[in-house]
Figure 1 (spheres, helix red, strand yellow):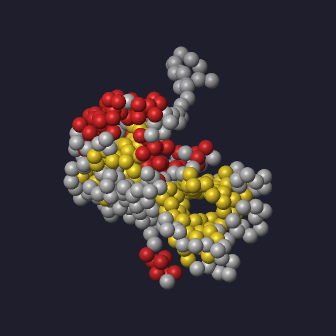
Figure 2 (cartoon, rainbow, N blue to C red; figure 1 turned 135 degrees about the vertical axis):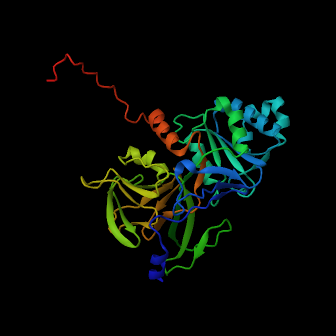
Figure 3 (cartoon, rainbow, N blue to C red; figure 1 turned 120 degrees about the vertical axis):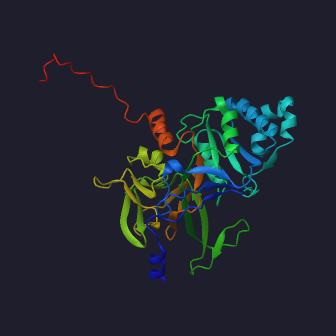
Length: 383
């Protein structure tokens, strides 16, 4: 069976699905070679005209209330079904606005932990910073509808649209006239040993374990990174890193970051990693403050399977988080399996995947910003 799995495995990773939500899909390019499309040719198209939209607003930000209201009024005037989280409408300022009450009554509301809207939403509009896109990704554990992100937060590396011309831009999306970039995600399964465990009705997978107890498995779709760190302990974290079943190294330091190309410009770049364009099929492994002068960040093919476990001689446990959320402890006997997901996030571009990325590098991270060297005139001595 192992040989069969190796034969079926591709170093390029799983082919991403090209249908996004109920009605959107990627326009196929007949000139594509080996089914690999030029990033600049990835275009959004609709099987049927979109009728529903999910609006995600950054919570507890008063500056977003007016843009949120304007956008919702515009969408309802276009006869779109608007989905909004209940906690967004719980804002006292929104509830006190009598002129907005008639619009609120047309909304479809949901709760993150109770309602599944994966087959109801045709596309998503995010108002806020990069965190709103990460949150939108977490709401969809399988196919993700196209996401349009407006830069109304602090950094805005993943949010290319300005809100000033939102009406024409949203209209273009509804008409299916837009470029998209497929941001790969990580499929993460955390297995932990739990004594006297019972089957959970909320989707926790339970399997019979050994005499020490049952095993509980939780699955996550991660857009940026998986971070394993030493938590509150003063000792070094000591975790083993496996690649396709082979132990490749033991991480001794503050922790390790496993990130997507999209996540390479987040925590990973702050820890000294290189920046990878989101269209590159890869997984980045970055140590956090390793106690070694030779432990550099590495890039591995998207098709590999990574596994992280506590070392047997580790002095303490470790902690893990997924896109900065769901933080939990890793104990001896637990393991974290990471592969590239076949469900990417189709992010709508302002121009195209290449120009948008370099624009974000320049505007948000000030990449290669330097005062230019003065011109050397012919009269001046070269030496």
